[in-house]
Amino acid sequence: MSKEIKVNCMGENCPVPLVETRKAINKAKEGDILVITGDHASSKKEIPMAVEAMDLELISVKDIDDYWEIKIGV
Amino acid sequence: MNKEMVYLDNSAVTRLDKNVLKAMQPYFFDTYAVATSEFAYTMGIEAKEALNKARMKIAESLGAKKEELIFTSGTTESNNLALKGIMYNQKEKGHLIVSEIENFSVLNTAQRLEKEGYDVSYIGVDGEGKIKFEELKAEIREDTVLVSIQHANQEIGTVQNIKKIAKLLKDKNILFHTDATHTFRRIPIDVSEVPVDLITISAHTIHGPRGIGALFKKDSVKIQKIMNGGFQENNLRAGVENIPAAVGFAKAVELITEEENKKLKNMRDKLIERIEAEIDDVTLNGSRKDRIPQNANITFHYVEGESITLHLDMRGFAVSTGSACFSKSLEASHVILGIGGDHVRAHGSIRFTFSRYNNDQDVEKVVTAIKEVVENLREISPLGKKGSEKNEFSLQ
Image (cartoon, rainbow over all chains, first blue to last red; front, side, top):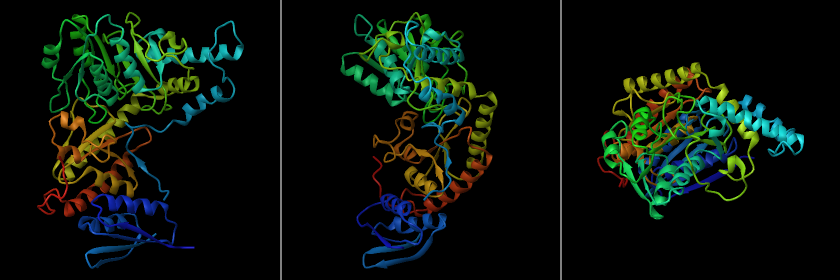
């Protein structure tokens, strides 16, 4: 059964959000959705780049108040 | 995620060759006894014969005698045994010289000896990573006992002129140790031609098993053992002999061919040529000419090595970087700093090291991937160029 996995990277700088994202992707099962939140500007651009290269689904990239949220389909 | 990786970190460790494993297996399951004397049981005698055969094969590859080879657990132990074994064996605490860009098992051993009251000099290197020969000559003193300078560097692959160094030291009656972990079976060393007194070698860089290495020690050179215990390895290295690994080491030595080394060199040259032609603002670290065949080390300016390794990993490539967070020491590469690079150059350095399991397609694939990764990262890089002018990272 697929599930939603939250990855909180608030307050973390590059490259930690990508490291945490990679960790979550490596543990996820097909069909899972990762919801990554953070506030480091470069990571908001860097994570989608990696997702695209891995042929995963970039569901959404949203700005919410003073942070961002990225949803990835595994 | 289980996708096929293109592994380009072969100076860290190589994949075990299946033929090596096959050679080792009988010594785990059939002839698994410890090496015994001729007066003990047959299985132990056969185990000893296998150990000696392995010793002979490896020694011969260096032009040495089998009695001159001490099996150890690998590079770190061989380097410790060479430095401490020689220095502890002196009547008075003498002087040791090492280069600034040695492997940590030499540098940290030298620092330990310093704390114990030995004098140590650290020789600098030039922009290519070659030791400053005049500085070495100037540092030699009456009480200099040993000089330890690696044959080739673990990060940038620069090969030292050990023939020239060995000749200088022989003329002055000073012992010479070289760590040949990254040149063994890649660049020939013949101790009957080059007067080196001690050589560190290891199986892990030539598709042999981990946990086995050796120290060549010229039979006229005296050392003190550094671990207390039994009388194995001519009473110089205590502990039950790792016979399966020794047999595997010898098999790995046998399997390296000149043709394989040419293939590594071709892949290396192709990678360097394409990256330099197709990506702006790159610097080759190390010597262009005197370089081990399996190594290319390149700085991609304006991007961090960690980010490159992460993005390459997520695309299926394993490489390493001299960037601080990647290393367990949490400091930028002492080698890149040693050749005159600054922290930014060290942070953007990527080491690609090839093995027999790589091919030209791997070079194509990694060049394509790194071009994209570097271009993308430069768009968002806080280190300058196309990214914001403000540096968000503390690089000091």
